[in-house]
Length: 525
Ligand code: G4P
Image (cartoon, rainbow, N blue to C red; front, side, top):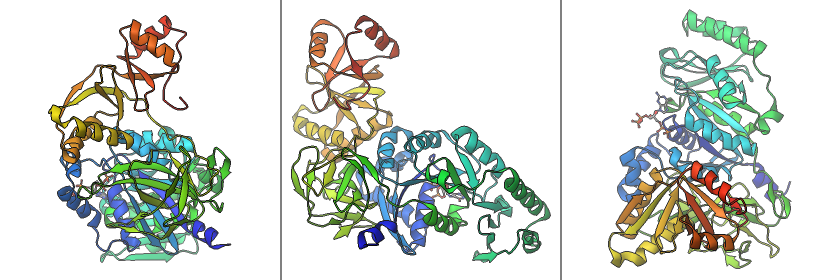
């Protein structure tokens, strides 16, 4: 194994998905503590709090009690280098989340033991399933009374359509929760009154009752034995190939807040989860140990630090070794660029780095070079990894600067936030600006950020429209603009788009103009 292959084999890159409040922040924090990336529990939360104080746009997050940004964190555990990509929990930002999911090799899905599979989990899960990425499930909050584990497995299988295989099983629940039993390695991980973690290996499953007698009440013990037997007899069989294909999910139990079950989860996860995967490209499959360096931009974020007004493009490395100062070619333009000040992200800081490997996420200072989906390559013969998903907006609004003197700042802000992929922007023939979003909360964030980051107060006027379609032929668009009352606008690349009030008006239009070809997205136009 050469150095590149060694570095690849110790990397794991994943995102945590969940419905808001299931415990994503808490689990992330506990993983960082385990990796020694932060020392005290509560640091991520307090980091959040600090950010609220210093960063204006995080204010919004605080006010609404939601998480609207995604971030990247790297830490080490054993000999592994782990990249966690955080995703916004709120459904209105699902487009951002979907793009982040394109940059990971596996996913950890958190389920609240009392609530089961919730709507946002279903949505995010579907994207992962469509990509065929391995999904690991962590059932959280076992320190509270929740639903019966067997019922939860059934729900996962029924609602999400994925087979579940519990790697461990909870010993008790709520007040009687004592730890977890590892079905694969036949060991008990439990906690004494001093909250010390104890691991006890069993020779035979039968010993479970001997060890647990006196530790848990008789009812809990008999339930545990009965359910374990049921699982052995009627549950699904562990199938690593199916796990790798995203068809079976290994399930873990725990309580993130008290770290119960978190170390076990991490250790199993690191062994089972795939490292950096090959990717399909315009030049065929690219293997991570391909000596050509390549990667793609999956996220752009402006003003991460308001005092610097900087913009960062997040690059997922697909193949080869990254070195600071290296020259690369941007596939979209063919232009050469120098990657001068690459950043890597840790729990509470970002640092300049000298090198990075497939699976890693590198932050590049961006002065307007990059667009989401851009691929870079060390060779002049570039290739790309296809477009990242763009969602058709479902809500529209007209915006303008309250103060006409601020027009220049207005245009700059609109264009930068559009390049981030935070919103879609259209222009009417009268130079009016229309925003399109998937979820209406994006409007609030946009208005807030325009004022906080660009000093522009906005007038925003919601429109009744719900559907946008790209018009394939520019001649058709021109004719429509002249002859009809349809709202024909242009997107940021000057491609014609027609906006309808609802599906009914779209269908009516299609019946009247069967010759006009419309597309759901701008892909390949
Ligand atoms: P999220 O990022 O998925 O939205 O969830 P987050 O970790 O912020 O957790 C949501 C709430 O659930 C928090 O409570 C958190 O403390 C609690 N929580 C997380 N894991 C566990 C667990 O294992 N057991 C229990 N009982 N609670 C858990 P909060 O009251 O909203 O916030 P806080 O006051 O605790 O900070």
